[in-house]
Length: 294
Image (cartoon, rainbow, N blue to C red; front, side, top):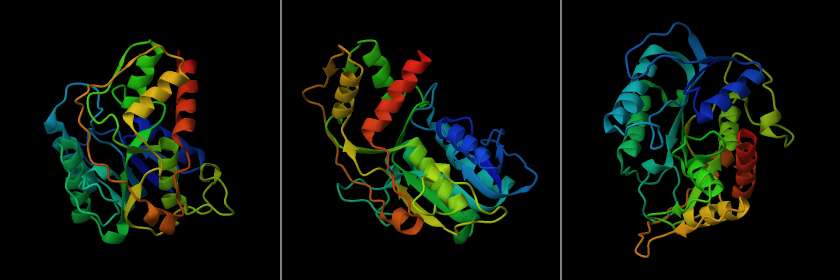
């Protein structure tokens, strides 16, 4: 299949690009600055839109970039390309946090500039595309080796390895959910190649046919691992795993937030996808890569 990937140089995009290429797809990495109008020749079976300015983007924090890249950039991309299927990576932070389980039908109330820009980008997608041509993946925090330096996992590991104090200002004990980067890519792969057969591992399957949509899926899907962990638990686990002498600093008056568990029944029913990599395995893999890079 002919596939265009935006954000192919990013944390998720690099892995997705490599996996799809290895399967024999013709994969194009978009190099244009999407915050500006651009043109692109040709059409694609799939466009996978990962490029975004997010909370952990390196550099000066500029709220205007959320609109320029996430909202206007999505519009410019949709104006420039033609695809049979458009997959947009959004966030579960577009939902209203009411302390209740979150399904794809839950109320929407994004709070920050990043979250608001992702919901606006979803609305842009719906304005440009037919319902059957659009897949929106609303994901929780994505973890794995290669994350931006500002993300919690690399920050905690770097400080623990250096025996520096780990500071948690707020939300230390509030549960949170995550998903391993390869599990997220599994979901995208299923949309492209169709569900795996005979209970085989998704990461090992190869497409059976080329030139068309294997699955025919569309709509919104939540992406998350069922297991929860608090920042305090995460920090203590990393300190123990790295045999660090780091201390954990949590203010006595630290505030906590409501926890709304993300439910992923829909993506399991329709795609057969379920995240399978737990926190312990993620940290073991991260620690191994950290040691290799040292």
